[in-house]
Amino acid sequence: MNPVHPSDIEPAGQPLAYPLTPPDCDLTDFPHMQLDVARLRNSDMALSQTPDACWSAVLLWSASWHQIPAASLPDDDRILSNLAGYGRVVREWRKVKAGALHGWVKCSDGRLYHPIVAEQANKAWEDKLRGEGCMSHATHQDSPDIEGGDAALNGSLR
Image (cartoon, rainbow, N blue to C red; front, side, top):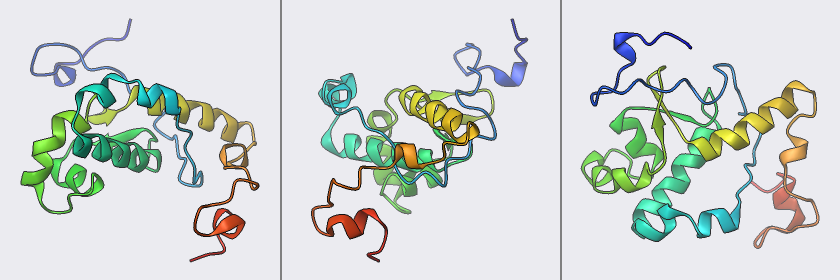
């Protein structure tokens, strides 16, 4: 068992979890993150949180995919407000914060991690380390974007 340092204790007296992804987990070159539609649709969050909180949650999951380590966010309301779509209006962010952060865990590195996003990030990171790169996580080329067709998927529309 790993030792727990006093600085790694939450206010409630519980030890903080170890980070859910490796510290060097960098998926910034992975433009896509898988979304388990049924899992999300049937989740406690979708059933119990407001639409605004749910939308902010999706934005935070997306933002965390390109943080280092992936699947994490800084525990800072100013940054979270911006990443959740509230810009500098931290007061409005705080109205949805609890719902938007549903499922997130504060870890011993001081960052917030989402276990389900971390699950996907760890899979993608393992693929990357094996040299499979981000192509295995890209959308299929035969699934056209509603507005831009295949060109949008290939990144040629800007």
